[in-house]
Amino acid sequence: MNEKARLESDIAALRPWFHNLRINGVQTAPDHFLGDYPSFKWAHFQQVVPEDLQGCSVLDIGCNAGFYSLEMKRRNAGRVVGIDSDPHYLRQAEFAARQTGEDIDFKLMSVYEVEKLKERFDLVLFMGVLYHLRHPLLALDLLHEHVVGGQMLFQCMQRGEEEVAALSENYDFFNTTIFEQRGFPKMYFVEERYAGDPTNWFIPNKAAVEAMLRSAGFVIRANPEREVYLVEHGGRHPMAEPPPSLC
Image 1: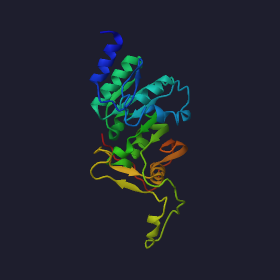
Image 2: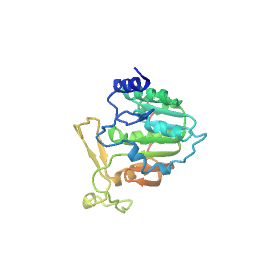
Image 3: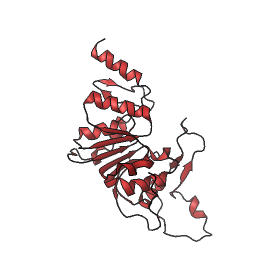
Image 4: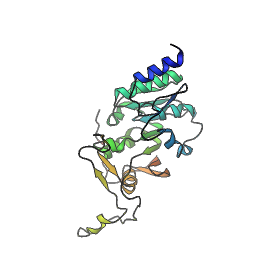
């Protein structure tokens, strides 16, 4: 068996892949239902991440097979940590890092356990995770409290209207029409499954994504692609209590 055939066999043994990586010329998921994912999505917002991340620490939450972790190393990032709660994805990520010769620290860990890292990172990637969580606001609170030291690149599936209404800080108790206004923050709860996935729990509209980020203490700096935001660590909402220690 030649080297390419051996690599193809190893990649096949790690199926199914959700990230279509290119490992030494071999694609891991060339028939992905979304296309060349996540490369095609990354192409729309990669410009908000500096080309040279020398000396920067990066945390990739829900790293899956490590596409974004690898991209950060390609941009010369220093310490890169990737966490995921799925052992299968971590096996893929570790394999891809070995094949490409990148030094990435992968850990089996839930987003609710980030306090254990005891480290704040220059850049946190939180891509495609929020809608898989039973407790999305708690997750954002924990990230703000424990690991986001500078900026966070955030992505979340959105459904519903794309308008963002200009809202007042307060409304009368008897004003119920505000909840029917287009652009009011809304979260759609999925009791069973969406797109065949039982881990899709809460799917927000655009207004809800932005409101949740602000409420958790993040300042929105850029919205380079419909579902993607670059945010910075800022002050928390005055009524948002610090998250409990879960570790």
